[in-house]
Length: 234
Image (cartoon, rainbow, N blue to C red; front, side, top):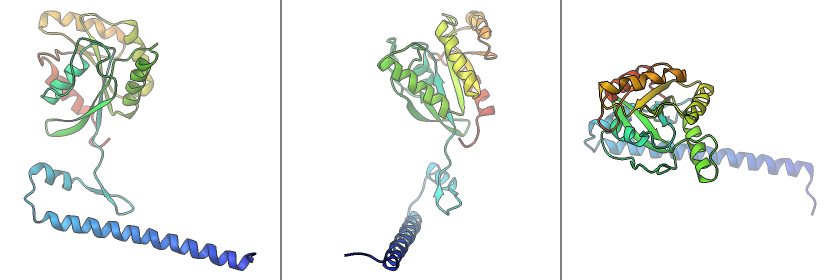
């Protein structure tokens, strides 16, 4: 059975009309559900955090409300320099796994963090090696993705070891990213060791920030400086 041109046009028009109708129904259904959910919130005693989340809703051009993305701080560096220890110190609790064995953190791991009433997403990454293969290459790739998606990067170096060839490779990657970078000279446990941090100026990333992730020394000052350049929305 053949179909004439007029019949084909009518069928196509009918399909387009049906698609438009279904789209309208989907939007109406979504709006009605959202309205119902908001109405039920009046029956609850919201705490300050929940109220703050709802207050942060932003309406897009399509009328759909969404939460603005929190700014992202990524922590990168070669294996065993104390990245996960720094994550725990910033969070104020033990969340990231800390071991002396390189490669324990293999994927990007994200945490919700807060400093001076500023909320942000903290991303812990595995150790970055320039010539890694296999699963180690996957770890390096995850760190590179974290840099691309971040708003600020913390580049952690073991100040007691000094800059290595791997650190210099990471520096090249960071410069290409164009992101604000904080050079974190970790494992500076007291003032007598601070000259070790000063030696990292030769990496060309600006002033090293001496910290002790384990003991917390210098971390508050580092966070204060990060907040100065961290955007409100990613």
